[in-house]
Length: 129
Image (tube, rainbow, N blue to C red; front, side, top):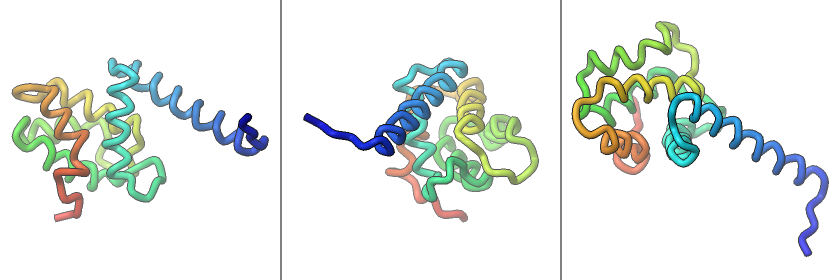
């Protein structure tokens, strides 16, 4: 028998709701729940503070490194364009928009590029240059 106090139960419900919301967001962008989870793991690698957002400059730097062999700097800039010119933090939805825009400009195997993006915490130094 497992006993859970009420506060733990509420935290669990909140977590389930967040996952469902994230999956629905991914579905609206054309991604399966599994791919959305994978992309979210990549996003979390940049969101080391756990705020639910990353600095645009950090995202751009990581994307530049992860996509260097898949698209030009100009194409990456075009993919980052939906984020605007301000320096406001980027949430997961903004991250998905960038990934979706990249899907349209990547030269070569999109799946391999996506693997590089999702695995950047293992293969890239995320420090600013």
